[in-house]
Length: 152
Image (tube, rainbow, N blue to C red; front, side, top):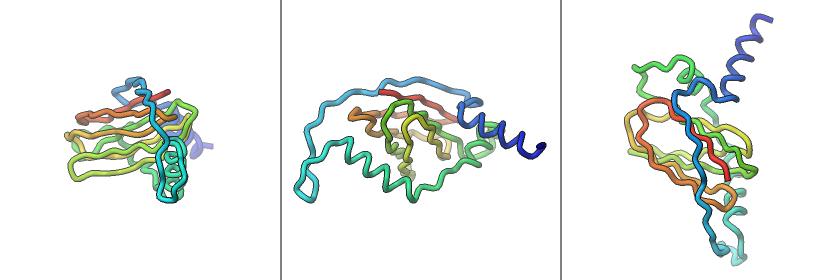
């Protein structure tokens, strides 16, 4: 029983996104896009392309849960990395692209789920992705753990 309690507390903290020192709720910009013509000559929507990319990426993606939890709970200023936590409160899956100086990563975030990643501190990062046919795009200078909640 003593071994299960700490694990339960850590998972609860991760799932409720407690412990991050910054939290914002960002609206997603709605965009109207025409169907895109794929390589096969058939018309597909941006949402369908995003869903295919999400399904392919989720099969190979390795979450950094341990490192993110350690950062959120311990928050060492001496660590060269910090966490970015993104809560997807929409009903659509998304692929979040994080890019910065010598850094690039795509993170699959399911509908009503939280995605997190460790990134080097003190850098500008571009966060972008499609969410239910809407474009999310943000540039942020990351110095400590950063948390954002996005919805459509």
